[in-house]
Amino acid sequence: MITVPLVLYNEIRKTFIIAWNYRVDLAIQLLTLVLLFVFISFFIGSGTIDSEGLPAVLLGYLVWLYAVMAISNMSTNLSGEASIGTLEQIYMSPVPAWLVIVGWVAANFLQHTVIVALLGVILVLILPVTLPLELAALPPFVLTMIGLIGFGYAIGGLTLVYKQVSSVSNLLTNVLLFLNGSLLPVHHFPTWLETIAVFLPTTQGIIVLRKVVVDDMSLIAVWEDGSMAFLAVQSVLFLAAGWALFNVGERVAKQRGTLGQY
Image 1 (tube, rainbow, N blue to C red):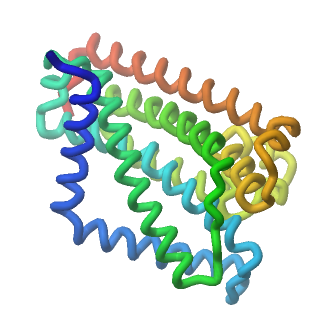
Image 2 (cartoon, rainbow, N blue to C red):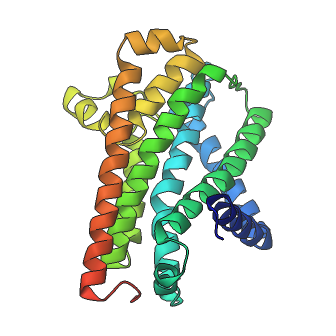
């Protein structure tokens, strides 16, 4: 009998085995991310490192990396399975396809959590920055991830229909880096741009996380000012809309008979 924990365990184990086999590539990616943040730090500080503002930037940067994971990995997994001819086999196997895909999401999340944790440790060691680990940050972090997962499902739906959407994924991740408040709080944006930015994935999550981690506000305080409630509603809507769009894309691909084509 196939159980949910077993399927999830197998997908997570497979992902980490593949990652370990390509550990040199992962190490180079980690180095690239370190150098990118160092460059961003000097850029924002006009040639110097602003130790006071750096924690907020680092927090936004780490959340942005999760956004990259959510947006690109779903598309990469689906297009990769289609390119080697195994996507249709997933849909014909005794294990429900949705469960396998949930396993992908869980595995990618855990893998990127390890990468983000290592990156955070390295940056704290080499830069004048500290990022306190606040237990109160867990609820807004989870809500932010829920919204990102929904957005990833939406990209997955597009991938099932159009097969190759890497250009869309790259565009979205680059837009998020500059517009979700990772580098500059959105309240510094023009009013019209701030209005757009707060409806992007991760923007509200970064706002709430900064209030809790950097400004040391309590969960009660961020709930009472409405920012936490807005994040919760937004994340649930992102998840519901993403899941719906994924199912639409899945249905369209099946009707066209192109589910396994690449």
